[in-house]
Image 1 (spheres, rainbow, N blue to C red):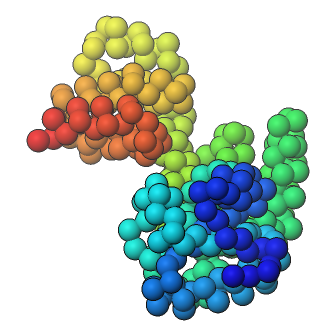
Image 2: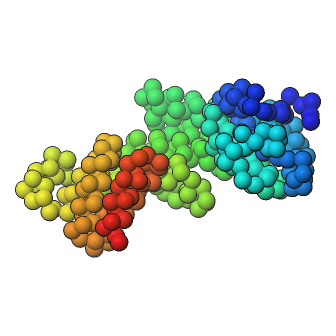
Image 3: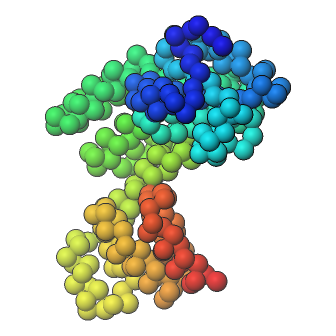
Length: 286
């Protein structure tokens, strides 16, 4: 289909090599298409043009869904064309139907390596070596150079949190477009920030434990202990505290028990704990 080094035809025989393994080096965009699909034929030249223009910053992998039905089924393809973007062996984004060139650029942009990525890597290494202040300064400079490249803000927010600058981290994220804030990683950062804010204003954990020992119905202490537990990755214990609050007083701090549970669900994603505790929460609600 093309002699380009940036475009490859894939099948069950070479999918692992050309898509999964290659995606550890650069993003791989898999185009699930079929010869009879008119929108596929419209999309194909646009994708090929972008693959050439980007010059290897991503690889376009063409997969004929009629000929490779097993792969199409494995990746849940239900309509054509379907685009799935792989990075580090996993699908990180997808879209369906014929797309405009600007839409495709927006789709690819967050995953394409940029010059500032080397600055990001240097900054995170600097932070690992104990110089968070210098790392934050580097990321601020990178942000000024590319204000619409949101992985920079993600790194910066995490370092600000590590330095205890919770307000600035939250302000940084809240200034981003709503669709970016809604992305999983940013949502998780905001959820974790909410628990950090609770702990910031709370007594010590030992004091809270003593209060709860004296009075197991001390909802304020249970709420603050749940935040400590989240930050210690003791999620089941945190959710037990929040369920107890829900059970005893739905009006406590404007339904803080339920809201806290939802924030933990956001943090945990598809962890099995989520389905277990979502069921417990639903039984209290309904």
